[in-house]
Amino acid sequence: MIMPETKKIAVIAGDGIGPEVVAEAIKVLKRTEELFGYRFEFEHGLFGGIAIDEKGTPLPEDTLRMCQAADAVLLGAVGGPKWDNNPKELRPETGLLGIRKALGLYANLRPAVVFDCLIGASTLKPEVLRGTDLIVVRELTGGIYFGEKYRRDTENGQIAVDTCVYSVPEIERIVRRAFEIARQRRKKLASVDKANVLETSRLWRETVNRIAPEYPDVELEHVLVDNAAMQLLRRPASFDVIVTENMFGDILSDEAAMLTGSIGMLSSASLGDGNRGLYEPVHGSAPDIAGKGIANPVATILSAALMLRLSFGYHDAADAVERAVREVLDAGHRTADIAEAGDKTVGTTEMGDLIAAAMRN
Ligand code: IPM
Ligand code: MN
Image 1 (cartoon, helix red, strand yellow):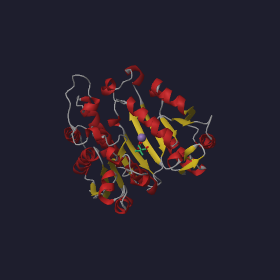
Image 2 (cartoon, protein in one colour):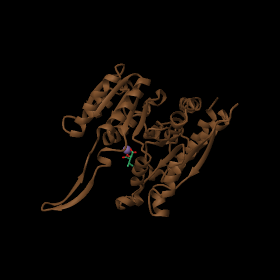
Image 3 (tube, protein in one colour):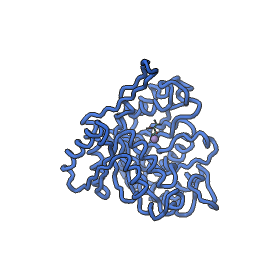
Image 4 (cartoon, protein in one colour):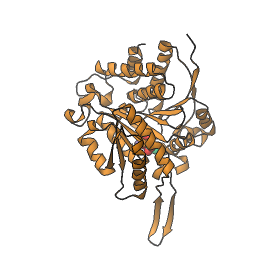
């Protein structure tokens, strides 16, 4: 057998439950080395609040260089009450936005799949949820997150300004990515905007309409964001791919997470033009449960599966991870966040062990 090249994975576990869930994803990646003969080299770097404490900045130079030199980045979570009142440059979230921008990761993919065996874990009715399998494609390096921001004193007191900016090329590349993804799936694309009010949304919609004829096999609908928030709860199973700008995608992907029962189930991939990607759970650092060994590692493990598939093209290993997750959940194993009354729960490391053990070549 030809030895596959060693893939460099930069690990930035971050704060709160980040290190706990990342450890389980690494466990699963190591299991794919044993089962499939792949080779990974893990390099660890400081990031987020812990980096502020130790290096005085949420995204130290050497961490960024390590990520730039890697084939993929595995991220846990950042933030916590300790840094919540810090100025902008000393906030963990600023590091997260900084690394997305620095690595050019403009396409954020957030799949939300309702597992039949977890259908009771959601707050919504099973008959509404059944069959839900959608993906939010969120623009990640533009919009109001990155536009000019300032405060100014006026005669009416202080004002604060956040600017939302989108250029045509920025919209084109994310929309094309979404059409391509839809083509690989059920060929339905919902573009979400607020074109009845916002100029950036009108440019967004025009651009989508101009590109759409290149993808005649994909069925396109435009949905206003307020209506999309409602339709996601009313008819989640009818969505396939949802493409939207940065802040709308942030909000709608949290909403989509709750369809699956727990945000602890939602994985994500952030991609640029090449193969390098950053993989992280959609959930945050959950400081309230950090260090207790009860966090759900499934979102991070499924993010590692996305890494195997999208950055490395190791579809066999990605399938093995996804199948193992399904099998372990089908067998009734639950972390606290997805447990129903009466379920016996497992902890973070036990869940990781069960998934690693269930993997097959
Ligand atoms: C996310 C998070 C981040 C975002 C925060 C932590 C900056 O909510 O990844 O969805 O808003 O993008
Ligand atoms: Mn968010």
